Image (cartoon, rainbow, N blue to C red; front, side, top):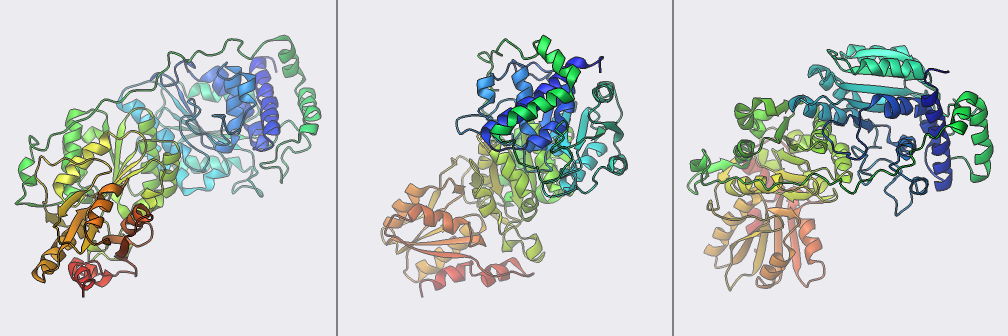
Length: 623
């Protein structure tokens, strides 16, 4: 007591406010707020350099609450800073309030959507990577819970941060011993947890997480030039300050009942007498409301690339064959030349996704995340939150490992640009473990996402440009392993939400709707059927989400009201179901050709036939 009495008083107020807001909401996690209150007090009122009137100021230190269920204590800190009125603060978890139960950017001071545990450290690493790249001096602090460090994603991120020497990154672990249903993996064995961080190459210290002087002392050290990231393992007690539930199991996610709130708050005041006396004589809550009238989110400039003047333009002639995955690499390099904010992240497959083309020109802007896809998406999220334009690429199959990170980036409305290569059974001999057959379903389900599946190199190049300019959420590009014929002239336009009608006549009996590799199968089938005097229309549905419902309906109506979709993806959640949803209220007969059984190793043509999605399978629909 004494030296940091104001911080102790602020911590007491944080505890009181966390109890008040969760009681008013009749939901929330007050006990985890009480364990972190001293840490939050030290960070927000002593350590961090932060202009509250300008949340996106590039010089601001960054704070990420990885243990997102503890967010009421952070909202309570912003109340003290004058960002929130008490009336606003007490609307925690209400429908019309931006103060959601776990952090989302609806509250502009939340750096990212968290709450699905184990993700904050990678996001913080991405922000530090931004600081290092742009030579900015800000620090990034990530507050984790001891329960979430059981997640492997935390240690992926820890190794990444150590490898890249992200020395302005500080992880604080609120080690309060208890999880939702019992003791956490390490309990209060803080030294064991600290040793683990040390083994991953971090500067690591153990402190009493309720000793403000210790907290401040160690956090002050992080402001100096260090040679590695810092992990502060803070021994705390869940529900600290309230004897009836401090360090006791069974109180996770249980707010104090309204009728019990007064006595509990009084108990806290009696427990922290000097801090309470300070509160009674000093005003610590800002009486001046923070003015955000001049605050505006960063605007985005349009990015343009021109395939006709590209140094590799000859590769995109209609006489050529070029894999869409390679066209993706060329388009990335073109984007890199016109925009210094383009960043690329790889998961040790750059020679397969062809992000190595970008790396050859811009080695300092490709980040190798190794085989750690969860970290790759988290780092991309951190980079994007600070204004970069990240593209992350790996095999489509392996993005499933990072589905939770993708899902949370969707909730945070982060504009990530993702590319999944080696999609479908058409990859051939590598077999089913390498075949992305679930990715369209996964990406379509993310809010605000766009899902693009080009059939040739020209459409790929044009759609990568569209991705660079899509800032409302996640954009996903699906690419094919094998080289395919180029279908389009270089001056063809491609819009998100569009499609291309490749074949049609006045005598069409059905409409073939395909995407990616199956467009070429549909065109083969068209020629075979034409020889039999059977005419069909063919649509390249390169935009899976949003899908061009109106054009598909229009062509289907001219094609006998019969539609056949063909896709190199499992039937669940893919192109067929997207078309089915678009046509559900129309009198159109739909047949879906998709992968419905487990694939195996083989030649691409063999596997397309085995799955029933090749030209011969399409033709058999007319027999």
